[in-house]
Amino acid sequence: MTSTTTHSNTARWLLEVTAAAAPADPAAVEEQRQLLRSIAQFDSVSRTWWTCIGVLNVRALEILQRLHEAARRFGTEAHAQAVAAPDAWHGPCFTDVGELAALTAGQADQGRRLGELPVL
Image (tube, rainbow, N blue to C red; front, side, top):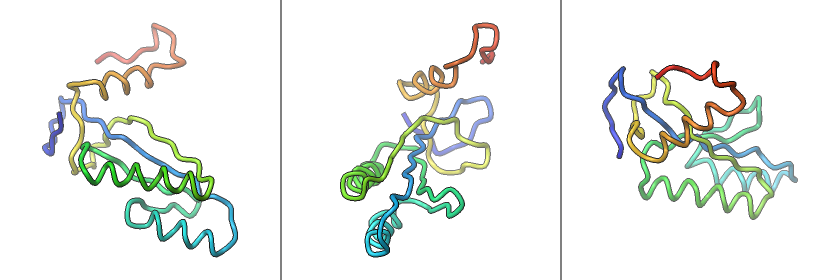
């Protein structure tokens, strides 16, 4: 289930995908840039491509496919994790209904003792 509206009392989740820029010769770096520039933003400090997905649609599948292709072709290290949507996020997002929210909540609680769990 997705939502494009913001409700302060509704949990909202995004799938954050990142890819570390693969060290390579200048030609390969340019090929990687051409592959990823239309689906992600580049942070030059961390040398990481990143984007967030708030709905599973054709665009989301294109993003995931290109990250997979970058990993295959250039050895790019790609990651995906569910994160809470920041208050400033105005795009579509997953809501607290469904598996993504359960996955995110479980990942957020990893490494915390029982008494340290957040109250929802």
